[in-house]
Amino acid sequence: MFQQRKNKRFSYKPRFQDSDDKASKEDFETKWNKVKGGGKKRGSVLTTLPALIIMLVLLFVLIYILNGYIK
Image 1 (spheres, rainbow, N blue to C red):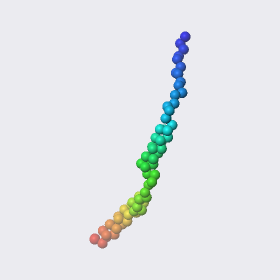
Image 2: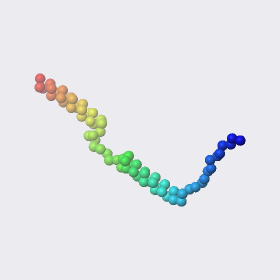
Image 3: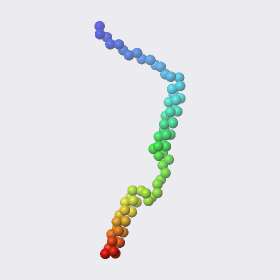
Image 4: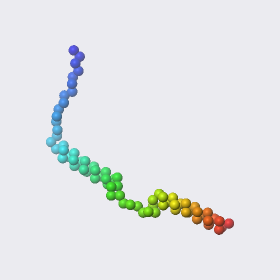
C-alpha cells in the first residue's frame, strides 16, 4: 500500500571522462608540487632557526661584555 519508490540507477559514462580526469589529476599534481616546494631550494645556513638563536645569544653576551668595559 505505502511502497516507497526506489531510485533508478543509470550506468551512464561520458565518452571522454577518463582522458580529462587523468590530465586534470596530472595538472593538479604538478601545481601542488610547485606550491608545496617539491623543488625546494635549501636556504643559507645562517638563516636557520638554531643559527639565529646562537647569534642572538652571542649578541647578548657581547653587549654584556661591552657594558662592563663602559662602566
